[in-house]
Length: 366
Image (cartoon, rainbow, N blue to C red; front, side, top):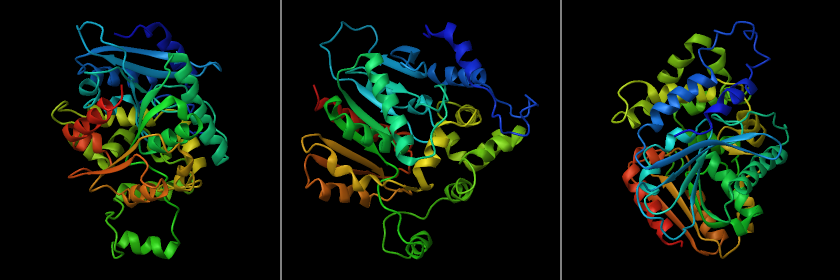
């Protein structure tokens, strides 16, 4: 199932503890390791029924991207179809797609990878300049595509992954057959402070719910530190902190795992040396806003590129950005879909509806 097992230990050796931590001399301070992340992820991936190939894809600069490829099991080889490539959001990893990958790989190959600096992928340094950090993410995706050998793809990105997928599609439009954005982060411009305060109080006429407490808490931290520094600083209390602030992750997957598998996965993804979150912090004005809002650049997408934007009806992300994109693109092959009873993690809150919508999109592409 994992032909890259021999290289896993090398990958773990590349991920040294955070050198700036005052506890770096005490290895047991943070109860995490790449080995524990691998073990927890393996438990999640054991749910997959279709053929799974999991391996590290090495980029020209020797960074490695942890990659899953799913294909339908025990069937004659079908005519080649454009693959679906899934890009997770901030603080996530390939394991979060566990409710989606099997279903979506019924008719075409599905690829999912850990973004550079997240999950089990390499964790290189990122520049503090927003444009350069974004470019490093985007170029790693393009180098990954070249290394895997994909000519083009249906590119789906969630949250931060949606922001980066859009940037990628702008720079490499010939490689994207259909762009699918799921509750994408970083599209609108940050409003004046007074307007934002009114928004968060819920008194402005907006469909977006008030920001959840965990978002506000991290937003306070991100202004001073890396966004998830509190998880690492908590040491042995880190896993409990994730359980306390993100109990929804356990609920979203409780029919698959009765224990804390999913919150442990989130913890191990984010208790490692910060890298991708350093890049995110460089690009973020605050947790909810980008320094380089994508609404200012979305017009650079080719009018011929189909674009579908999926939003959770109960998400803290403002779906009105989707309508703004429709207007900016003059309705050129652009569709906005609101999924009822779903929050920011649409794919986990309403997996059946999400899979149905994405499968319909995929079926529109050869």
